[in-house]
Structures are given as structure tokens and as C-alpha cells.
Image (tube, rainbow, N blue to C red; front, side):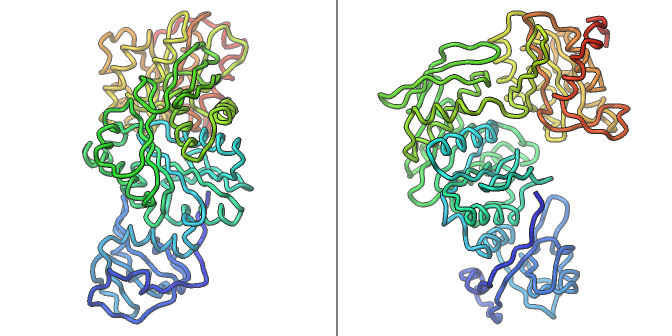
Length: 500
């Protein structure tokens, strides 16, 4: 999704800055557009200097003024004297508020439901959207798969979500007549204050794990960022919490607002009981109070049932009955890179999953083990979102929960990719189970040749993301495409054994 310039009929900058100016009394300005990228400044824009992961916008205030910025917002006084300056405590927070205000505060015109947590955000967002649509609501969605405003379906933006894209997305949902917006909120979004100025009508905490802990610097910083989602809630809004997750449960003592809990282990107000699990489908009994309904899903694994519970509990907040909820959950037959089946007539199951952390890989392999009649064979390749410090832990999970594994990389020609593979291998207690095959395409072929009837092959770490096989001269392919090519008869006739 390409960010669009923010434009409006105009707002008072002093009114928005009320409470932050202190003794500053610059003349008021009528603002119609803004940006935090000095390279994108157009005459009449307000330039907001923020400190990003790569650079400090304060260093480019002069350039922004020379390009025609009508005012500079910063966290400290800057040597720019020919345009008005306003100093704020947190320019990131102010930028988010400014973006939302310029488009009419759309989060106050529709019910915005936030989905946050370390795992399951995208799946829960898609499940909840399907349930709400089944109930007759007009629902927009903004998640890592992309953006749906009720009319247009756009792919996800490259790189992190920005306040500009978020503001436009919500504003377009309002313009299209949406009544609800389901938005995925990462811990990075929360740390960067991307959602500043947004008011949430409800928030669902899927699980508070350790993914991206290296980016945040510590586990406490990560948890502080995740808890920030609760600060975005409207005064009477509901928090939906995973009762199976100890870290999430500890938050309950801090909450003074309505809370609903869900859990697969019987401790939540909305719960589930597994009935049957097979490699191609599973069924469970969804219960809330005295009401129960059967649900059948083609996406398998206890973690998917947890995601269904999160979506069902959130839908309950909006008065959706369990029968309608079940129909909505069942309508989501597959999600790209989320325990996604690849069927080409082979006698064993092949699933693609985006698991790229120890927790996510554990859920994935546990689901595979539960429905396998033979071995569990896993191909794992690190991608750019993996926490490097967790690679040995990923290796420990692979070694403990798979029968044999191929360790590879999404971009094998990248310098250092072999070293990352060896980091994963170092976590194996039995190195005989670990095969390093740097070329991801060849690693997938190896796993498929290794598989026999009744086995389950898991291709993990990349999901639906495209990557570059060795020797492909820049051509991109995703795991599903590589698997389908490798399952052609000419490939399967080759030897099942490959020494790596």
C-alpha cells in the first residue's frame, strides 16, 4: 500500500497543541497536510521531526524548511529561524495525533478493534473479520496480509506501518461506509506510537510472548510496549485476554475496565474442547456460558483453536451469537502461510507455516505431531524478521519436536546466511537430525524426497513471503510455489536420500 499525502480543510495547530505549549505563544497556523519525511515535504506542509530506527529527523529541519515547510514540530529547539517552531515532549505521539486529526478522527466514527500480541494477530484479525461479516456488519481490515476498506483490497505496505497510512486507511473505511475496523497492532507499532490518536473500541491480547525482544532491548520493554494497547482503549471499552497465557493473566490485576477471557484449558469464560484432529481438518466444541456449538476448521492445531477462541470472544462483545460465530470461523478455510496445505496428490501431508520464533515453531510442530502417523520432517529457514538471539532456541525446538530437519535460509546468497544456519544447528542435542542445506529450494526438495506415506512435512520460517532461490537471478518464489514444482513426478522419482 502506497502512503498518500494527508490533506484536509484545515485544523488549528495551536488547538491541537493545547497543553503542550507552556509559555510558548507563537501565532496560530491553519494546517492542511504534514509529513515526517523531509524528502517528501511540499510547500505548506508541517514537518514533524521524529527519531526513527535509521535517522533523527531533527537533523533535517533546515532542509525541510527550505523545501517549503510552513512549521517545524520538534522535541528540542532547532536553528531554524524563518518558519515557526513548536516544541513537544514526544514528536512521535504528536505526529500520530496530527495525522488522525487531519482526516477527521476516523476512529471516533467507527468501531476500531485492535488485535495485539506476540503470535496469532493476523489470523485472529481475519477470523474476527469473517465472523463480523457473517453477522451482517460492514468490516474493514488492516493487517500484515493487506488492507480492505470494503471496496479495494490492497497488499500490505512495504516496511512498518506509518501513521499516514493508518490514518488514510481508517478514513477510507469511514468513507466506504464501514461500521467496524479490525486492525493488527504489533509491539513495534506500539513502541513507535504509530497508533497515537486512535481510539480503540476493544482490544484482544492473543498472547504476550518474547518475539522481537531484541528490538525492544529487554523483555520488560517489550511487555511495556504491548500493554500500551490498553491505553488506546475508550473509557468503557472491553479488553479480551488469553487466560491460558500467564503473562496476559497478570495484566488482569491492573485493569479497571470490563474484561472477557478465553482459553483452551478451561480457565476462560469462553472455552473450547477438542473433538477430533486430523491432518486435513479438526473439530471442537466452542462454549460460552451455557451455550455451545460445534466448529470444524480446515486449519489445524491447538494454536488455531486458540485463535478461533480469541475471535469468538471478541465477537461476543458485539453481540454475535455462537452459531453465527461458528459459520464465520468455518468460512476461513485457509490463510496464506498459516498451516497452509499444499496438495499435489502426494501420499504425505505438506504444510507451509510462517513460524519464525521458538514459540510459534513449537505450536506448529506440536500440531504436526498430533496428526502424523509417521515422521515429522521440518524445513526451517530464518528470514529477516527472526530474532538472531533466538536461533539456538529455535534449534532446540526443531531437535526436540521433529524427527529430522533441514536448516536453510530465505536468502542463501546473503553474506552470513551460513553462519545463521549454524546458529540454529547449535541448538540440536542430536546433530545427526540436523542437515544444513543453504539453498532453500534444495532443502525443500530434500524434505519431500525424504517423506513417506503418513509423514507430515512442515516448511517453516517464511510462510507466504517470496524469497530468492540460489541461481535464480533475482527471481522471487514463495515456499508454496517451490513445493508444487518439487512435487512434479520428475522430482519425486529421484533418490529419497540426500547427504547434507
